[in-house]
Amino acid sequence: MASEARDEETGKADISAEEKRHLDDLDGRLSSMTPWELLALTGDPTGADIKRAYLNATKRYHPDRYYGKSIGAYRARLERIFRAVKTAYDVLSNPAECAKYRSRVPPPVVAEKAAAQAEVDRDKVLEARRQQIIAERRQKMAMQSGPRVSEDVRRKAQDLFDLGAEQIRNEQLPAAVSSFRLAVSFDPSVLKYRVSLELAQGTLCEAQSDLGAAKIHFETANRLDPANTHATKTLEQLSRRSHRK
View (cartoon, rainbow, N blue to C red):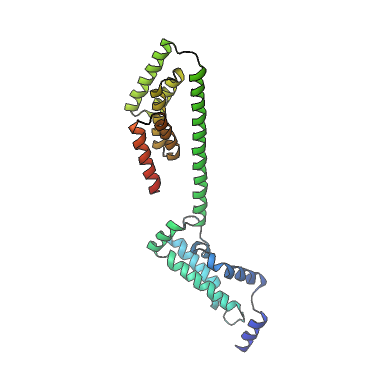
């Protein structure tokens, strides 16, 4: 005991320099580390993975690992680290507590994937909005400077619109989007063609779980025709779904 006390005072310990650096670093970060980090867990660990990680950690950080050796101040460090590892395991080994904690603090790789997916979703929304602005500008230019639409072209546009409406009733969304888009290209001055195109595109994006792009299309439809109840109701539903997430 007297020898160990002297070692603690002088900083001597029967531990390699590399292990000292590791223990010093780990002890200094304990207060900011998550249970996942303490047990070196990433991805989507199972109960067996958590138990295996805990056993590995206890083998490395249990103070008795250095039984009979003079480790000086590192005994106190090991005891702090071991208690932190045990606390981490108590949280993650309890299925209910683990699920609750995972919902607030996901494992590192899962968190990184979620952040990457969020960035992809943002890019998709921005691209959809960019394409929408381009389309609106083209339609505006066509209405302002384009030649007057002939009666034959008007009839063709109406026929395409009627076809799109029939395809909507038959739940043929991609085909309906194409028909409405053609109707708009033939006669962009007709508001109902443009509104129907936005509604069909929004419905298709919603069916594909691209809620950000769907919202943009329904907002455009609502802006073109504020009295359109379908656009208004769908926007409210999308908003509620977004809040639930």
